[in-house]
Image 1 (cartoon, one colour):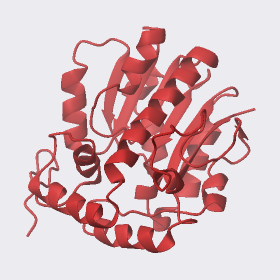
Image 2 (cartoon, rainbow, N blue to C red; image 1 turned 120 degrees about the vertical axis):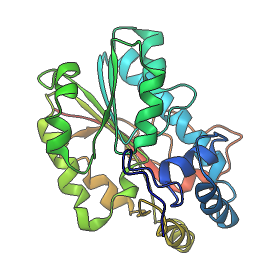
Image 3 (cartoon, one colour; image 1 turned 90 degrees about the horizontal axis):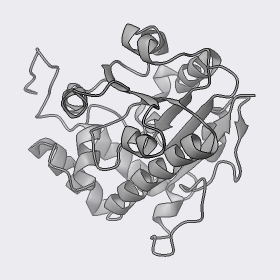
Image 4 (spheres, rainbow, N blue to C red; image 1 turned 90 degrees about the vertical axis):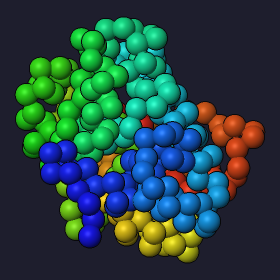
Length: 266
Protein backbone atom coordinates (compact mmCIF):
# COMPACT_ATOMS: atom_id res chain seq x y z
CA UNK A 1 0.00 0.00 0.00
CA UNK A 2 1.26 3.47 -0.84
CA UNK A 3 2.09 5.49 2.22
CA UNK A 4 0.49 8.93 2.04
CA UNK A 5 0.48 12.03 4.19
CA UNK A 6 -3.09 13.38 4.16
CA UNK A 7 -2.09 16.81 5.39
CA UNK A 8 0.14 17.37 2.36
CA UNK A 9 -0.91 14.78 -0.21
CA UNK A 10 2.68 13.50 -0.13
CA UNK A 11 3.21 9.91 -1.33
CA UNK A 12 6.89 9.09 -0.75
CA UNK A 13 6.47 5.45 -1.77
CA UNK A 14 5.10 6.29 -5.23
CA UNK A 15 7.41 7.62 -7.95
CA UNK A 16 6.79 11.28 -8.65
CA UNK A 17 7.59 12.87 -12.02
CA UNK A 18 8.84 16.15 -10.53
CA UNK A 19 11.10 14.37 -8.05
CA UNK A 20 12.39 12.03 -10.77
CA UNK A 21 13.32 15.09 -12.82
CA UNK A 22 15.08 16.48 -9.75
CA UNK A 23 17.07 13.24 -9.54
CA UNK A 24 18.10 13.50 -13.22
CA UNK A 25 19.44 16.97 -12.43
CA UNK A 26 21.44 15.66 -9.47
CA UNK A 27 19.12 17.17 -6.86
CA UNK A 28 18.34 15.85 -3.40
CA UNK A 29 14.60 16.48 -3.21
CA UNK A 30 13.59 12.91 -4.03
CA UNK A 31 12.77 9.64 -2.31
CA UNK A 32 13.88 6.05 -2.79
CA UNK A 33 10.87 5.26 -4.99
CA UNK A 34 11.71 8.22 -7.24
CA UNK A 35 15.34 7.18 -7.52
CA UNK A 36 14.45 3.57 -8.30
CA UNK A 37 12.06 4.57 -11.10
CA UNK A 38 14.53 7.13 -12.46
CA UNK A 39 17.27 4.49 -12.55
CA UNK A 40 14.96 2.25 -14.59
CA UNK A 41 14.53 5.10 -17.08
CA UNK A 42 18.30 5.58 -17.18
CA UNK A 43 18.73 1.94 -18.14
CA UNK A 44 16.90 2.61 -21.41
CA UNK A 45 17.72 6.31 -21.78
CA UNK A 46 21.13 6.98 -20.21
CA UNK A 47 21.15 10.45 -21.78
CA UNK A 48 18.20 11.61 -19.64
CA UNK A 49 20.35 13.74 -17.25
CA UNK A 50 21.81 15.52 -20.29
CA UNK A 51 18.29 16.05 -21.63
CA UNK A 52 17.21 17.46 -18.26
CA UNK A 53 20.18 19.85 -18.18
CA UNK A 54 19.56 20.96 -21.75
CA UNK A 55 15.92 21.44 -20.82
CA UNK A 56 16.86 23.81 -18.02
CA UNK A 57 19.12 25.74 -20.40
CA UNK A 58 16.24 25.92 -22.87
CA UNK A 59 13.99 27.45 -20.20
CA UNK A 60 16.71 29.96 -19.35
CA UNK A 61 17.10 31.02 -23.01
CA UNK A 62 13.35 31.26 -23.45
CA UNK A 63 12.85 33.47 -20.38
CA UNK A 64 15.73 35.77 -21.34
CA UNK A 65 14.31 36.07 -24.85
CA UNK A 66 10.82 36.90 -23.55
CA UNK A 67 11.94 39.50 -21.01
CA UNK A 68 14.88 41.08 -22.79
CA UNK A 69 13.73 41.02 -26.41
CA UNK A 70 9.92 40.82 -26.21
CA UNK A 71 9.36 43.08 -23.20
CA UNK A 72 7.32 40.56 -21.22
CA UNK A 73 6.86 41.55 -17.57
CA UNK A 74 4.43 38.83 -16.43
CA UNK A 75 5.18 35.11 -16.47
CA UNK A 76 2.87 32.24 -15.52
CA UNK A 77 4.91 29.04 -15.16
CA UNK A 78 2.54 26.05 -15.27
CA UNK A 79 3.84 22.77 -13.87
CA UNK A 80 6.95 24.54 -12.65
CA UNK A 81 8.55 21.58 -10.84
CA UNK A 82 10.97 21.65 -7.94
CA UNK A 83 13.16 24.73 -7.50
CA UNK A 84 16.62 24.32 -8.95
CA UNK A 85 19.46 26.58 -10.07
CA UNK A 86 18.50 29.46 -12.36
CA UNK A 87 14.79 29.43 -11.67
CA UNK A 88 12.52 31.45 -13.95
CA UNK A 89 12.26 34.43 -11.60
CA UNK A 90 16.03 34.55 -11.09
CA UNK A 91 16.63 34.65 -14.83
CA UNK A 92 13.95 37.31 -15.36
CA UNK A 93 15.07 39.47 -12.42
CA UNK A 94 18.62 39.74 -13.72
CA UNK A 95 17.08 41.74 -16.54
CA UNK A 96 14.27 43.49 -14.65
CA UNK A 97 13.63 42.88 -10.93
CA UNK A 98 10.02 44.03 -11.33
CA UNK A 99 9.00 41.11 -13.56
CA UNK A 100 6.14 39.26 -11.88
CA UNK A 101 6.36 35.46 -11.86
CA UNK A 102 3.77 32.99 -10.63
CA UNK A 103 4.71 29.33 -10.32
CA UNK A 104 1.86 26.82 -10.45
CA UNK A 105 2.21 23.16 -9.51
CA UNK A 106 -0.07 20.55 -7.98
CA UNK A 107 2.76 18.82 -6.10
CA UNK A 108 2.83 19.71 -2.37
CA UNK A 109 6.60 19.15 -2.14
CA UNK A 110 7.20 21.52 -5.06
CA UNK A 111 5.03 24.20 -3.47
CA UNK A 112 6.53 23.81 0.00
CA UNK A 113 10.07 24.18 -1.33
CA UNK A 114 9.08 27.05 -3.58
CA UNK A 115 7.38 29.01 -0.82
CA UNK A 116 10.38 28.57 1.46
CA UNK A 117 12.67 29.87 -1.28
CA UNK A 118 10.46 32.86 -2.04
CA UNK A 119 9.23 33.77 1.44
CA UNK A 120 10.43 37.38 1.20
CA UNK A 121 9.64 38.03 -2.46
CA UNK A 122 7.04 40.63 -3.44
CA UNK A 123 7.08 39.86 -7.15
CA UNK A 124 7.06 36.04 -7.12
CA UNK A 125 4.30 33.69 -5.97
CA UNK A 126 3.84 29.93 -5.68
CA UNK A 127 0.33 28.56 -6.14
CA UNK A 128 -0.69 24.96 -5.53
CA UNK A 129 -3.19 24.19 -8.28
CA UNK A 130 -3.68 21.69 -11.08
CA UNK A 131 -2.85 23.07 -14.53
CA UNK A 132 -5.35 20.60 -16.02
CA UNK A 133 -8.09 22.71 -14.42
CA UNK A 134 -7.52 26.05 -16.16
CA UNK A 135 -10.62 27.63 -14.64
CA UNK A 136 -9.25 26.92 -11.16
CA UNK A 137 -5.84 28.29 -12.11
CA UNK A 138 -7.08 31.39 -13.89
CA UNK A 139 -9.60 32.11 -11.13
CA UNK A 140 -7.17 31.63 -8.26
CA UNK A 141 -7.07 34.85 -6.21
CA UNK A 142 -3.29 34.73 -5.74
CA UNK A 143 -2.81 34.57 -9.50
CA UNK A 144 -5.35 37.33 -10.05
CA UNK A 145 -3.46 39.52 -7.58
CA UNK A 146 -0.16 39.01 -9.41
CA UNK A 147 -1.07 38.62 -13.09
CA UNK A 148 -3.12 41.03 -15.18
CA UNK A 149 -4.50 38.89 -18.02
CA UNK A 150 -5.63 42.07 -19.74
CA UNK A 151 -1.96 42.76 -20.51
CA UNK A 152 0.56 40.50 -22.28
CA UNK A 153 1.58 37.44 -20.29
CA UNK A 154 4.06 34.69 -21.08
CA UNK A 155 2.68 31.25 -20.22
CA UNK A 156 5.33 28.56 -19.83
CA UNK A 157 4.33 24.93 -20.31
CA UNK A 158 7.80 23.45 -20.41
CA UNK A 159 8.16 19.66 -20.30
CA UNK A 160 4.79 19.25 -18.60
CA UNK A 161 2.10 18.46 -21.19
CA UNK A 162 3.58 15.03 -21.85
CA UNK A 163 2.53 14.28 -18.25
CA UNK A 164 -1.13 14.93 -19.15
CA UNK A 165 -2.99 11.92 -20.58
CA UNK A 166 -5.21 12.15 -23.64
CA UNK A 167 -8.29 11.39 -21.52
CA UNK A 168 -7.94 14.82 -19.91
CA UNK A 169 -8.06 16.49 -23.33
CA UNK A 170 -4.84 18.53 -23.17
CA UNK A 171 -5.77 20.34 -26.40
CA UNK A 172 -8.86 21.78 -24.68
CA UNK A 173 -6.82 22.66 -21.60
CA UNK A 174 -4.22 24.61 -23.55
CA UNK A 175 -6.90 26.29 -25.68
CA UNK A 176 -8.56 27.59 -22.50
CA UNK A 177 -5.32 29.25 -21.43
CA UNK A 178 -4.74 30.66 -24.91
CA UNK A 179 -8.23 32.12 -25.05
CA UNK A 180 -7.78 33.86 -21.69
CA UNK A 181 -4.63 35.72 -22.76
CA UNK A 182 -4.41 39.25 -24.14
CA UNK A 183 -3.00 39.93 -27.62
CA UNK A 184 0.77 40.14 -27.49
CA UNK A 185 0.97 37.27 -25.00
CA UNK A 186 3.24 34.29 -25.56
CA UNK A 187 3.01 30.53 -25.12
CA UNK A 188 6.29 28.68 -24.62
CA UNK A 189 5.95 24.92 -24.84
CA UNK A 190 8.26 21.91 -24.81
CA UNK A 191 7.07 18.34 -25.18
CA UNK A 192 8.51 14.85 -25.60
CA UNK A 193 8.09 13.54 -29.14
CA UNK A 194 7.36 10.14 -30.67
CA UNK A 195 8.52 10.74 -34.23
CA UNK A 196 12.15 9.66 -34.02
CA UNK A 197 12.32 7.04 -31.25
CA UNK A 198 8.78 5.59 -30.81
CA UNK A 199 9.94 2.27 -29.32
CA UNK A 200 12.20 3.99 -26.82
CA UNK A 201 9.45 6.39 -25.80
CA UNK A 202 7.05 3.49 -25.30
CA UNK A 203 9.52 1.86 -22.90
CA UNK A 204 9.86 5.09 -20.91
CA UNK A 205 6.07 5.46 -20.84
CA UNK A 206 5.76 1.96 -19.34
CA UNK A 207 8.04 2.96 -16.46
CA UNK A 208 6.16 6.20 -15.79
CA UNK A 209 2.89 4.24 -15.62
CA UNK A 210 3.82 3.49 -11.99
CA UNK A 211 4.38 7.16 -11.16
CA UNK A 212 1.95 9.89 -10.13
CA UNK A 213 1.81 11.12 -13.72
CA UNK A 214 1.89 9.23 -17.02
CA UNK A 215 4.42 9.92 -19.75
CA UNK A 216 2.63 10.64 -23.04
CA UNK A 217 4.98 11.73 -25.83
CA UNK A 218 3.24 13.02 -28.94
CA UNK A 219 3.95 13.62 -32.61
CA UNK A 220 5.18 16.89 -34.09
CA UNK A 221 1.75 17.40 -35.67
CA UNK A 222 -0.10 16.91 -32.37
CA UNK A 223 2.27 19.20 -30.49
CA UNK A 224 1.86 21.87 -33.19
CA UNK A 225 -1.88 21.94 -32.51
CA UNK A 226 -1.30 23.19 -28.97
CA UNK A 227 -0.41 26.60 -30.39
CA UNK A 228 -3.76 27.09 -32.11
CA UNK A 229 -3.78 30.38 -34.03
CA UNK A 230 -0.77 31.76 -32.17
CA UNK A 231 2.09 32.69 -34.50
CA UNK A 232 5.24 30.64 -33.95
CA UNK A 233 8.47 32.58 -33.61
CA UNK A 234 11.31 31.47 -35.92
CA UNK A 235 12.50 28.78 -36.30
CA UNK A 236 9.13 27.25 -35.38
CA UNK A 237 8.52 23.99 -33.53
CA UNK A 238 11.92 22.35 -33.56
CA UNK A 239 13.95 19.70 -31.80
CA UNK A 240 14.53 21.03 -28.28
CA UNK A 241 16.30 24.30 -29.10
CA UNK A 242 13.94 27.10 -30.21
CA UNK A 243 16.21 30.16 -30.23
CA UNK A 244 19.64 28.86 -31.06
CA UNK A 245 21.43 25.93 -32.58
CA UNK A 246 22.14 22.93 -30.32
CA UNK A 247 25.44 23.15 -28.47
CA UNK A 248 28.24 21.37 -30.31
CA UNK A 249 28.78 19.13 -27.30
CA UNK A 250 25.15 17.97 -27.12
CA UNK A 251 24.33 14.33 -27.69
CA UNK A 252 22.49 14.35 -31.06
CA UNK A 253 20.10 11.70 -29.73
CA UNK A 254 18.98 14.06 -26.97
CA UNK A 255 18.10 16.75 -29.50
CA UNK A 256 15.70 14.39 -31.22
CA UNK A 257 13.60 13.33 -28.26
CA UNK A 258 11.26 16.30 -28.09
CA UNK A 259 10.07 19.56 -29.60
CA UNK A 260 9.94 23.12 -28.38
CA UNK A 261 8.49 26.35 -29.67
CA UNK A 262 7.45 29.85 -28.73
CA UNK A 263 4.37 31.53 -30.19
CA UNK A 264 2.70 34.94 -29.93
CA UNK A 265 -1.01 35.73 -29.75
CA UNK A 266 -1.83 38.13 -32.60
